[in-house]
Length: 133
Image (cartoon, rainbow, N blue to C red; front, side, top):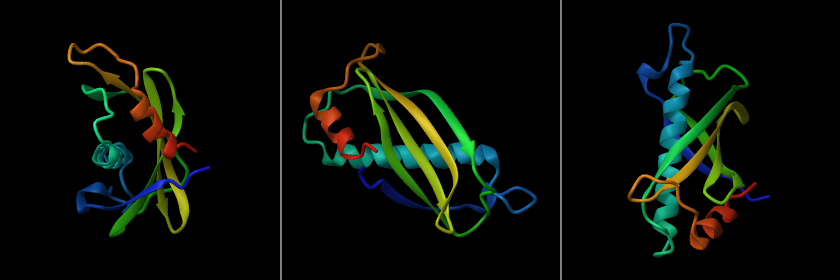
């Protein structure tokens, strides 16, 4: 099992609700930002082995394990759960005080220039395998 990619993210005052917890809808935004940072990190490491186009979220599932409290920052761990032919699943897990507070699993699909789904390239698959859990 590989070590997840860790991203330290600042929490904003507007992320919290009246009880001082991070609002459940903001978890989606945190996961999105972690996913974008992770994909940008992968792109910076890839050397022309990508197939071009864009990536979209096809499905997203969230499990809330504990209350995410407002704090200066939160750690998001990103790993790859599954690699298919045209899609893959990223896991974005929020960690506070050394324990998971939420898990977001996102199925991502690559689209070509026409908007149709396309197969992952061997280079993309190889890079995702590095982060596979």
